[in-house]
Image 1 (tube, rainbow, N blue to C red):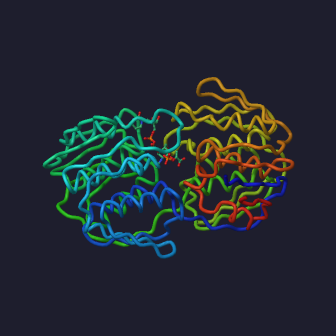
Image 2 (cartoon, rainbow, N blue to C red; image 1 turned 180 degrees about the horizontal axis):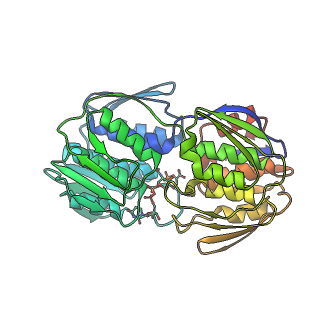
Image 3 (tube, rainbow, N blue to C red; image 1 turned 90 degrees about the vertical axis):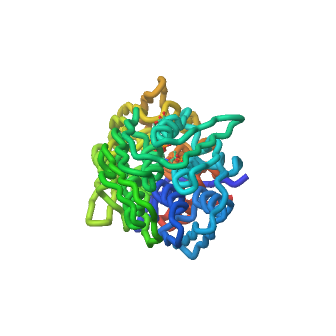
Length: 415
Ligand SMILES: CC(=O)N[C@H]1[C@@H](OP(=O)(O)OP(=O)(O)OC[C@H]2O[C@@H](n3ccc(=O)[nH]c3=O)[C@H](O)[C@@H]2O)O[C@H](CO)[C@@H](O)[C@@H]1O
Ligand SMILES: C=C(OP(=O)(O)O)C(=O)O
């Protein structure tokens, strides 16, 4: 079983580039299904989830090739609309095939998607929205079949600004008859990137990034070239790791405006954060101060950085209160941090983190993607050797994280 071995206590120093965002590229790759000629995506990270999405597209009949960070998809030859269950369950983003396949072929068969186990993660908003657009949905023996001769524009009000449902419904509406309005839509930058990609292909999506998205159906999408936005969660993880190790790290090729909440909270801990166009530098030389965090849909503090931020706050001066308001079970990393000497107690969706002067290395296991990133942050700062197991979770969302961190001076190897 692969593991990371980290000898902690070495401040991170240096410069590192930020690659394309997993959560942007996955829905965009799914959206290429609706385009009958070739799309080229640039800045595509080498991640397990991306490989799975490319496998799904190939299985459906698309021609998919990767050269470096460019991925070319020709979805013209697609003939199948059943997504194999073994690929569905390998990641959450497999659910994004639903909207595009339904929209192009009038039918799709999927099963429950996988992804991080951080709550129940139902897909009821997705299904309700597809029904509102005119799809008939049958759920049987673990499969979900959606069918519609045509989809018709309608008004959809989401109960919660779900990122995935907003994206799936935008994609389903792009080739529908008439106008679809999505109210209480999520506003994450990855949704804006998806809309930008779709509009480049000839779609008419307005309001992405606001809570009301209007999609006017078109008859046809054509191929395009699109560069994926930088990964704000990877950038945030590196920024937090810089602060936790009391180092100084410069990130290049970032979108600082996507990181407002994170920059604000890091500054509250006492870290120095400097922003210059697409460059962010984080420096921390003293023990950070405790801060309270409440995760929220964008532009609030991202739930995907709650775990790494908790790792930092376990070593802060004072007590921090962290409220997880997006997912009901996203504290699985707490037990592992406690093994490293952290003092954290959890009551439902609230964690109380009493800072300790230092953590000590231990054998720990990643149980989900960002929980795994939190253990790396903790291991980099802890005294002694930390062994992080469960790398399959981390590999879903961080490209060669050991290599990037070694370049910044970390003593970390994959064994
Ligand atoms: C691939 C991707 O982009 N993943 C991100 C996406 O996940 P994902 O799109 O799954 O997250 P959502 O925004 O949909 O989930 C938010 C909340 O809504 C609930 N919900 C969602 C859909 C639904 O049909 N019914 C329902 O009840 C969820 O259980 C959760 O409690 O946004 C999350 C919130 O920023 C991030 O943590 C994930 O990294
Ligand atoms: C929860 C995440 O991913 P997914 O939605 O793919 O499970 C994440 O990226 O932190």
